[in-house]
Length: 141
Image (cartoon, rainbow, N blue to C red; front, top):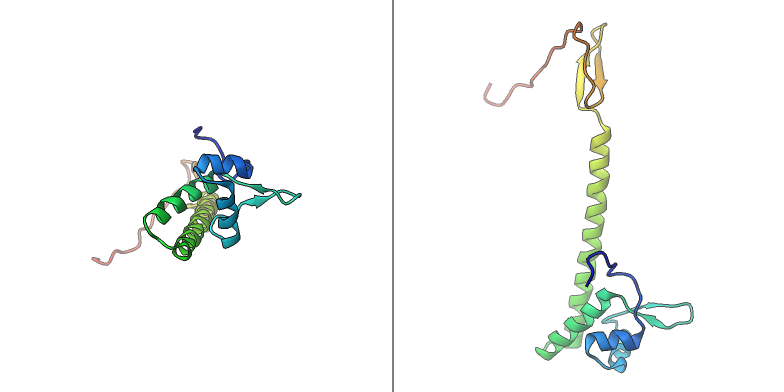
């Protein structure tokens, strides 16, 4: 499959998703009723499955074939969905943190009156200005 395909895009009708998963469409309907694999719905109420759903259907079939009960599979999928949501949230928070850190200045200089002046990253201080660098004492000092 293509790398840039959105795995969350609900594009497959039930017959296509069933064929891709190697199942009967009635099995997909049953899994939807049980909450195992819940597809998106069109305005008319038709089920639309994403690539992620097809992968889940295959996983449900494999786990069921290994003897895992449908309630246990349901709990496993619920936990996987929670993890996916948390990962997405962590990625968003990391991006926000990175944006915030890039906006904050971490370079300071002494102004003409002795005040501390914040400089943007990459800004150079005029050579005529004296700059005093202070290092906090370490625990060994």
